[in-house]
Length: 335
Image (cartoon, rainbow, N blue to C red; front, top):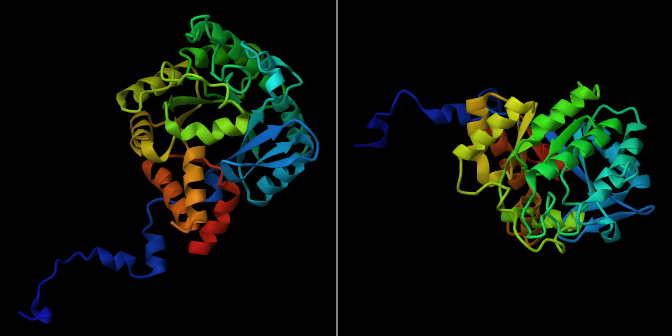
């Protein structure tokens, strides 16, 4: 039988792939700068823009250099930036006291950025790991056990402090049970009724956080893992329970962290709970791409767009990524 005599099905899916215009029209998901949240690290000192060794092209900025951050976020139409502090070792204590200092790095950074009339929001992480001398997200007993309820009391105070300094979104990343409800109650009591809560509800105990811990200076302090409070990487139903509890307690949005290994979790939370869902392309995911591209193993631009697009396809409404300032350029390059 000749090729011309072969019978084909009536539906040829390649018809909608044959040209750019039809691919655009039938595209199911869309990635743009509107989807992106840019994490920014801040440090003490003056005129500092210090590249993080384990995260090429990611920097710690001194507060006087945050004008550059403002300009970049404005230029690339980034809707939200997230502030993370590199706390000096001498300010770290067993109880994370610096988290409640109204003159700490994050509070001063908020004041600096809020002095501009900007079109983007500012999110602040709520957890104690940048401030404790043991590197954990919560308070520890003498036996090394995380003290959930006692930690919540500190997280509530930290949240109010950040709201007082202008944080638009409070983002508890600590994974303590019950903290969302306590934070929401205190925000309401203090008239911060419009302050949003983005709960890191599905934060897994992942090996992909190592470069971030370098960036905030907690890696050398951390002597034990965080498996007693971060999620088991093998669990899925538990993520739904975590997210459902945090929604019931007053969270406005839900975070899944990390991203690329947990697309099923992003999909389940968005599909089953119908709630605004964020994904975090974490530091390890960023660094693997960056170092791989530097070795000419992969194409950086196409890999970044493919990964971020997979988050959108899975159902993420927004994506936290260190690539945020570059995504609009990458989209043009591969268009």
